[in-house]
Image 1 (cartoon, rainbow, N blue to C red):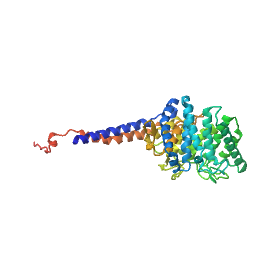
Image 2 (spheres, rainbow, N blue to C red):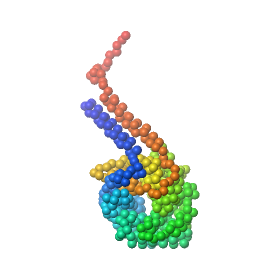
Image 3 (cartoon, rainbow, N blue to C red):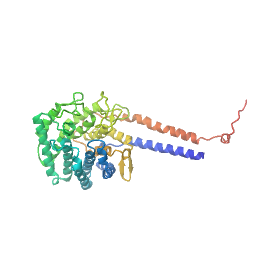
Image 4 (cartoon, one colour):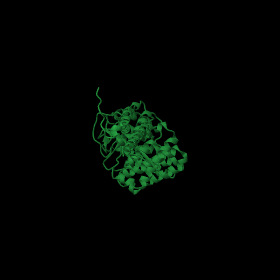
Length: 424
């Protein structure tokens, strides 16, 4: 049965060679900045099909067990990705509206509000009101001037604006609370971006508020990085922690709506402090260079100091701030390490074990480029060099086994007769 062993070794060598080849191709996957609208949409549809199937199977409830906003984010990100797909492909606009409204209805439900407090200003806190108003604005924008969401959008945006103004007039802080006694600047940036989007759609004007907010926020930046901090005192708005990637990538995504120039400058600053220093892994550090701490419920587990969730969201930032090198590197990293598979028109990462991760990545891959490009260059193409070494070496041992397995043997050796030694 020696031939069975030979065939098995050859098949294994071919299998691992094919896998290495797939990974090599994924290293060079086109980023959204290198794709047409049609290509972005074609790439997104299998991802959205998986997410819809997962949501129908209860993934939002499962993700809620992992972190406090798991349920809300599962639906909100699904809806936001569909808004971007509908904006890129008018033929899919009606389908995109149907799916985004379905997601909005879930965020606007008792289950969507369950972990938030109605006693806050605005009701249910700035996280809930900011993200839900942002999604509602996206649906209204996609629908057009007669969108049925406009009255509610105007009312919610005005409530957010009033809460910001009251906070600024009171303590001078620009940061509202998301939970009782807890404030994260990233949530307030989302809320203010939602107000700005609503202004464009409803005709309201909160430009003065935005200017006051930006000045107050700038005076409370993290001194180490010059970026907005991760957490602040809920009353004064003064920093209580450093800037961190988990929140910074969200801040950057929405600063593009609040003030594109501010956002572009912060993206450049962010890359300087949070870009990976690990060869071959151009992801995002959770903590600034020079600070090494462990992960937590916000960041998830860290590998070599890098945050998978922050890296996924930063891809969308790179697209918005028109940073082709960073977008290409983060896309290649996600495709290579995510071990994606596509079956029956549904594409998932890590076997679909963590749908919320797929949702964040899909939201990033459907992001649309903004109006301001950041200065500086992202990672060089040379980040791939370690992979060029690792991938061939990972299959070399299998082909050495193949060579040994198929090596011709002498007839005497095959009969078990030792060769004789000739004398001279």
